[in-house]
Every structure is written in C-alpha cells, then in structure tokens.
Image (cartoon, rainbow, N blue to C red; front, side, top):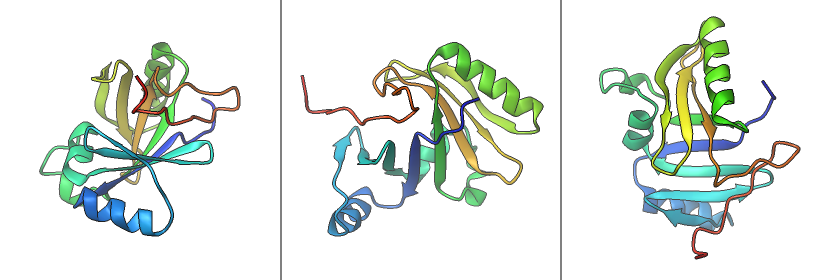
Length: 144
C-alpha cells in the first residue's frame, strides 16, 4: 500500500456556513452535488454534510454519535487495489464499515475504521487521476 492521503473530508452541519468560513480564510473551491472540493497542494480538502458522510462511510445511525465527522481517503490506481487494501486493513484489525462497491461517480470504493474508530475511504476514482507521485488534482467540474 502506497503511503498517501488523497482527500480529507470534513462532515459539516451547514455546508454554506462552512464554505463561507473557508472562503474568508482564502480557501476557494467548487461545489458539486452538495459537496465542496478545495485543492490544497496534491490533496483535496472536502466539505460535505455530516450525516451524508457518516452514511456514505457505512456508519449506522446508532454508531454515528461517536463519529468524529472526518474521513481520510486513500485513492488507488485500480479497483483491484481497493479490494487489496481493504483486505489488508481487515487482516490488520480494522473494521470494514462499507464493503467496496461501484459508486455513483463511476468509481469503486469502500470504507474501514481503524482501531480508534477513524474513518478511511479506499477509492478508485477515474475522475481524480493519480499522478506518479500519488498526488491528485481536483477536476474542473464546470468544464463540459
């Protein structure tokens, strides 16, 4: 498994309010489908609704109160690598919270929590191509 974090996602209570704060800090991004993507170096910083993030991560409502509202994503180069990383995580003691499956954006992803409950997404996203060094670039969602 290559060592990298591709996206850092914060689950927020109010997307417009959170986006406004980060814009006042000089962090400007693109909103698409209720999610704000901000490029920070070779990583994407993402704002998304807290409940949507918990649900996407496979965290049931009864477990959600312990959810810290943050997800780290490790993007990989193929669907097969998603399965391999999730299997490695499981054998290391992680809990698979959502098995890998096709995503609405044309990718393939699954989630696990580490031994302290931190949520990780393992994803193959053809729209966020990985550079040779593992960095990603947020695409221009407004381009046709």
